[in-house]
Image (cartoon, rainbow, N blue to C red; front, side, top):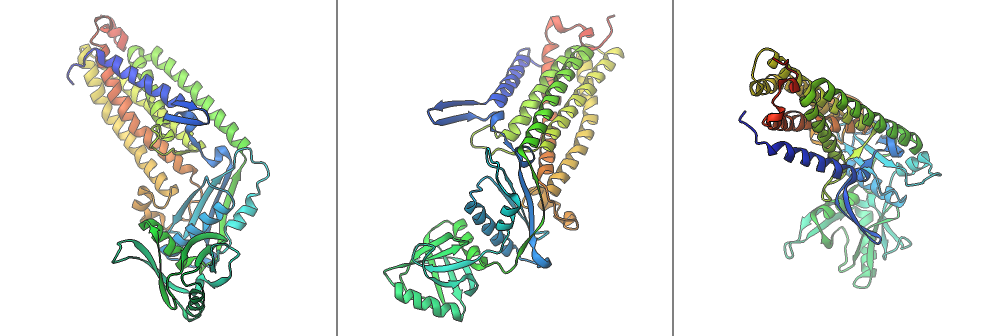
Amino acid sequence: MKKVGKPIFFIVAILILFLFVTSVFGISEQYGDYKGIYLKGGDDIRWGIDIRGGVDVTFTPKDGVDVTDEELAAGEEALKLRLAALNITDYEIYPDSTNDSLVLRFPWKEDETDFDPQAAIAEIGTTSKLVFRKGETVEGEQIMEGKNVTTAKVMVDDNTGAYVVAFELDSTGAAAFKKATTELLNKGSISIWLDDENVSTASVSAVISNKGTITGNFTAEEAYNLARKINYGALPYEMETENFSTISPTMGDAAKDAMILGGAIALLLVCIFMILRYRLPGFVAAICIIGQVAGSIIAVSGYLPIMNSFTLTLPGIAGIILGIGMGVDANIITASRIRDELQSGRSLDGAIDAGYNRAFSAILDGNVSVLIVAAILMGAFGPASSAFSVLLSPIFRWFGVATTGIIYSFGYTLLVNVLLNFVFGVLCSRLMLKSLSGFRCFRKVTYYGGDEK
């Protein structure tokens, strides 16, 4: 590797310090009730239900009914409406087509004390009912039910280019709809309701019997969602609770605080050990480890306002700690190699280059192994639509339903830290140490573990 300029150490060190401070504290401004966030900090991390407290539940079709992907998507829409009706807005729901299941996670509300998770699960999981009513309110006279719709699909209007939903009715629905549209023609509207939640409302501009269209300023996604709700609003299958778990916020907060405190103490002791044992390479390693901590926080907080925050769980914190431990290991391997090269008679510059080159293969092997494990964990316990889940679905389809996403957080933070190991433990470490070795005052081999000649 060519010589590295002396200012590089200070540039990299200042950048790492900036990332660490801003990742922990963030940058924001308060204007009355409005808070402008420029960079997200630790306070903006979204904590998982095992820390904040909440419910983790898996719904499957009753009696082992095999459902299609469209029916599963409709079930997802129905659950979302149920959650909205219960004022549960902070939730995660993942359709798992491999196992015909819906995985739902939602945390407790702030300061919530009287929430009954079993009652909420029972209410969320009951079969939904779709109805067509006269007028725009839930009290309007019922015209027909969703089961009277034989099919609904998205089409594009040839004249306007807008998305519309075309539907066809069975004989019972056609008779009821013809009567209702004749009565409401040019003077009323018909609304669609799912579990007493309004799905769509449209004015009646023509008499409709066996087929018709619903128009509106739909986006493609809105049109497809509406078609799914109409097709499967009255779900042709009942859902049952495969399993569920709950945790109180008190238990989660205590565990989180203990893990963070333990991790901070361990980080401090490791940095002190690295400096005392490996001297200048240990000092550089300590800075790089701080950079890795900053990178871990950035990866879960979202950092930039346009980025989504990742849900961090207790295993996710463990993944960060384990990943940082791997970063320490990478720096120890490199520092030991440099010392060995110096003791074998190499020059300082030659020992640094040889140390990093010879340590890299060991670092690469260890990190790639963990990378594979992290990918498998994310595929096994993550959302069914995630990249790793789709890639590994031929394998995981033979196993049971993944009931908890908290392990997904562990895989994610472990994966992130493996990548950070190469950025900070290999690249930044080498740049800073090569830069420091360019200063005359840091040219003594004893600073790098060698013996004074």
